[in-house]
Length: 571
Image (cartoon, rainbow, N blue to C red; front, side, top):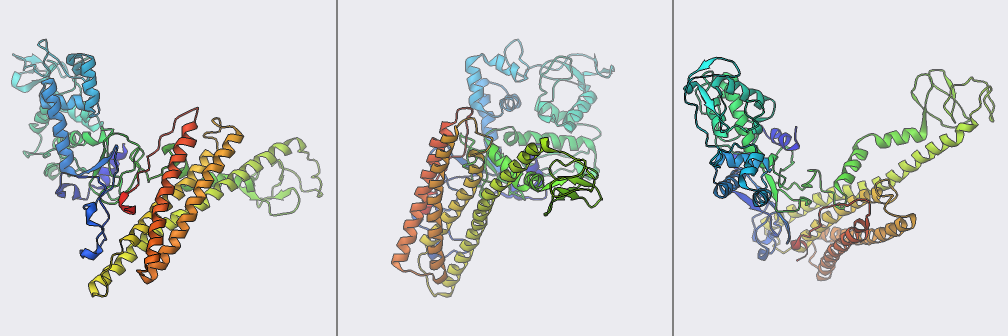
């Protein structure tokens, strides 16, 4: 089951998707706005525009709601109808085959003739060269599935010309829909492979004599199960035919997001009701209008400068048990009798398990209890000692190295969370001051400083995960010699430490100013200068990573989300 579908089901109890009022919300460079207050004194500079997600020049992204998804899907279908001269249901089939990539479709049409492209997409093409123009058979036929005779009114012919009785078609549709093949239901004729026309599938399922007489489904708007389009009374009788129609319409509506490489549902939990569409590069970290920031490629938390592969492995380490296994390997040995881990807390090399089994700590083999400090009677394991010591040393070294990076990662992540709390507290205090009429001063510079601190904390925390894999790990060990790796690490840590130093300096300045809400001009200038300095250091940090580290990889390429500064933080 796809991640996108899971996100939709998480929102099954929400009606937010139907309640959206705007077609879509463009990501922009709009400035921040103080939350929780409508007072003019609590707004950022009006010159920057309305509040919203930020994006800089180049490939960007936009936040879509239900209406926007329906609109974009309809526009894409209309464009293909106009170009290929086919009916809308055929155009949708072709677009789904090309994963809603009109550029790829037009490129294929330019390279080859439209007829061959339609055939490739599973669309029937008649001798006249038009898609989907086959008519109904002219007389009684014998259905080649159930072998019963049926009148023309009781049969349906798909665009390929193959006709079967309506009951067999319906059963075929229900089976395919139940197996998750709603978008590619193909003709039942052997070796045909033509995709069944959407209009005919809906018509047959809707006219099923066993179905309740209701307008099942709805407008086809994308949304969670049970919330696509209008209401359905299929559940009123609990009968399968209408349920199949609802599932079919819902699946077709979701195709624009689930089959589209340029669109993803926001991974917020519970789901906020939005999707995000990128204009080009999928390696971006968009911000949904609900405030959720995520990696568009892997749908996980933002992790640049780490690649998605790095982040997957880091996530497994910090939430899995790989480092627990390393600790056990470095500090315990399994009892040869009961297999439970035993930790040696001192003494000689003869260890006694709670089950009563004595064994040698060096090689792990079962022994008797007679021993001295130098040897165990009747036991010799000198040839195993070097290998066992090597395993223990490697595991201990690996765990110690991991803890070095994890502790610093965790430190900045904790600070990242605290910066958000500090920002909320500051805005609350400012709002209270404005409401009571005590003061109505501009604290934009202080709020921007807190926003910049939060961004920098996120960059620094991820940089330690990056360093864990890039320097001294297995991932890129074949790309650099030990000398080059050491030089790269020194360069990286120099930039990292400079950024950390400036972050801690700004943190102290902000702490002092936040406590007293001072308007001291010197303090204000120091905070603003430090905010700008941090943004500059982050840009240089990422430039160094992309050019001097990733740019020198030989065995593979690495793609990360490009860091795009929010101009309103430093304006």
